[in-house]
Image (cartoon, rainbow, N blue to C red; front, side, top):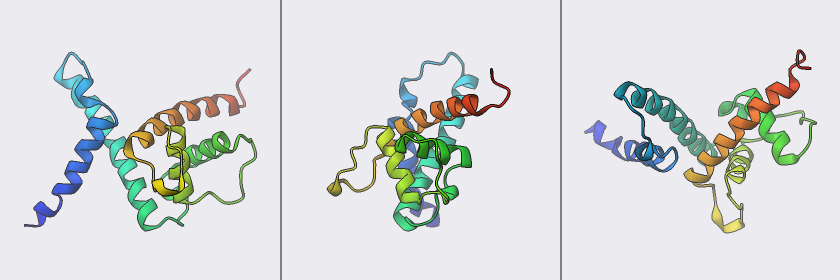
Length: 142
């Protein structure tokens, strides 16, 4: 009986994998390749689902509960178009809204939280920006 209560969470995870990472469109050659890809994408899907739940349940918590230090710093600099970081990390609600904006979320009053598709796109963009942020801040570079 307890397992049945998890059914909706499992459906959410599958929807995130299908909609966000387009698992069904993947054309890998072997089962091993496909397994590795689904494993990696499942971790990202779970992280995005966790962020969404945190934003709904604890919107004023700091985003360090859902993003790494480099992720939230990169996100902040990208959205605020600045290189100066704030004294304190933003809230989970701010971070998830900004992440959604990177993925196309318009942040209108009546819209509520960003959807999984805009979060997924935003997260992919954020990861590209994190790599660039690391390169540009590397003291050994140039």
